[in-house]
Length: 233
Ligand SMILES: Nc1ncnc2c1ncn2[C@@H]1O[C@H](COP(=O)(O)OP(=O)(O)OP(=O)(O)O)[C@@H](O)[C@H]1O
Ligand SMILES: [Mg+2]
Image (tube, rainbow, N blue to C red; front, top):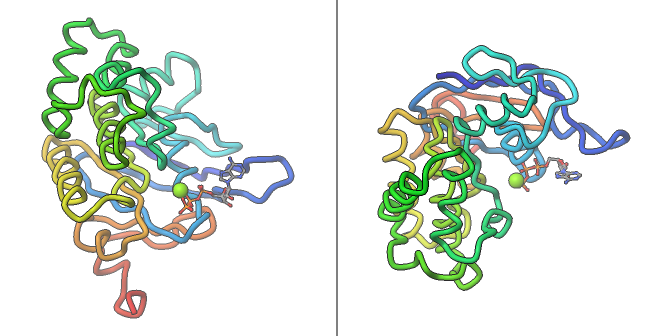
């Protein structure tokens, strides 16, 4: 499996500056990738391109070598393979309760009620949500919302999981738990791309760090190559 971005240019408005400016990146199976870079460097914009919510002004997104043409069919296929947990979980939770919210993705993929239920139960166990399935989504704590949003995406069993600052607002215990979930996912041969401002986390967790500056890849590679001692002081 391979997801590639080739010379992507994107601007939110015609007169505005480019949020992505000639960005190229290739992602492979079973990788732990940390996406770092200062506020506004384009991390979230890149993630919104990964599952086709945003369409580049020029350049291409390719899944397994096939250029995404943004037809309905191609987008459905892409979203089967590429999941995105938004920076703000509030943007992700729509349904009355947690069970309904997690089952939404599998049902949208056309799975049966029984299969959707099986997937909800599986990811609820993984994300420690079993006791919260009947809870209204608005009545969850911040950390619970984050886990519910993550579970909703995992239930679609994406090959590539993009998690936008997922661990940001979590306490150290919950952070460990969420990282364990992401690691379990990678062990299944899936790829996780986690954006973060926490360089220590990026350094210890990721196999590859991708550092964006001004809408393009500034440096990438194994942590020890990308983050020099000078960067860390
Ligand atoms: N909806 C939008 N409308 C207009 N401009 C936007 C919008 N979203 C982002 N931008 C601009 O695009 C650029 C990239 O933003 P983006 O949100 O991708 O950065 P980021 O790396 O995710 O930042 P942060 O670390 O703060 O989350 C910024 O200059 C930002 O102001
Ligand atoms: Mg962002």
